[in-house]
Image 1 (spheres, rainbow over the protein chains, first blue to last red):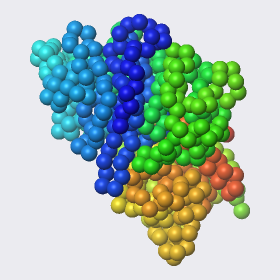
Image 2 (cartoon, one colour):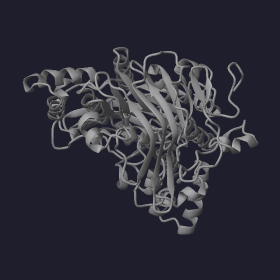
Image 3 (cartoon, one colour):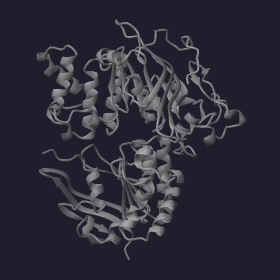
Image 4 (cartoon, rainbow over the protein chains, first blue to last red):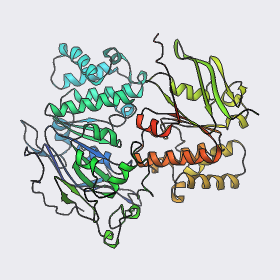
Length: 336
Length: 223
């Protein structure tokens, strides 16, 4: 169930441009035979034009479900509540969760919201070369047939592929090359919002940086990117804002600089401490099952700051130009 | 008695006409963590497969404690094969989706004829070491996260008490906390058994934090 969260525009955010995407109280449940999976709970976030928002968290925290919910790609056993307003430039605003499959298919997917999927192997057509798939996408989005080959080469170069590699079938590509190919496919229609779900999986460090810088450049040119990743270093490199997800909720959403310099949520602090360039110390304990979340703060069983009050769920409270959901947040300058 | 060491001597491997390793030498001694670095396609994973005795090189050979190893895979006696274990990047691709985590961990023991009860007890012990809670052991891969499945793969890798553990991008797809935890489990095992570890990673921070020595593989010759 969604609580009626106040949906007034958060005036605390640093820029005053209207949000391109404003998600409010998004909740996703999967109904299994004998359990309900709490995949996303009361999630609110916004992405402005020119902004790169990174959603970080460990595997199974619900971050990919967020991407699929925005694009209407959830399986039939899912129920979705909440709102996700998209205000595309030069087009009528719409609620992604409430506009219907027909409109999603014809107007939204690819055109207004591009997706770089997590698993390129399952997203590519195995019986067509990369070039055919890229050119088909370009033509479907209004580029004349004669321009398609040149544009395809340009897209390949942009994502760091040798244009000659486009002439291979997906099974002839390495995991990293396939990942770059699906990125090129998502960029082909030039959508105002790009959702990139672990776009750097299987890439080595130079290509990771190349892909991240590509996303950054899109934002600098006025586009917007929602980057979903488990890689904190990747998010630090390019994100303007970072949202940390834990057990289906966003526990901290703040400007990247502030979050990395002084995390406010104990979970964020623990994740950062686990980085090899920091303490390399794991967060003690295990994340809870999304089918059996505790009533209060889901992180409390692993948290050394937890007290009795943590048996009630903490509401997201403003912290500077961001939000933190914790009864005992770390104060700036205090030791973690 | 020679000191514990796993070594490649002048190893060359080609796939078709493409040579991925050209007379490569590498030595991993007991107790050390050797980081292996190189660009994509430089043959890091192939070298790991050769050292894991999963792939016979086209030229050169592997020695285990100074003894030359002839052949690979099942042509080798189990007592030799089980001295080297591997942890791969993708736990999904490295596990049988039909088995429970408990069976996945115990599989190498069954393969060498360990009695069922004994195998089960040893699997539970290792699962605990790798940070898996007992309720997870009855589940199959589709019902656990990548991090949990990789913990099971680590438990499976340690089940025969290998003298050498090869980690091929084994934490690349995991979050920072799970990565740090797995590294701690490996390091602890290494300390107790004086095991040698080969670490393949693209992450410079992880490499400098974890490896005691770093070796660079040269860029492969382009055909």
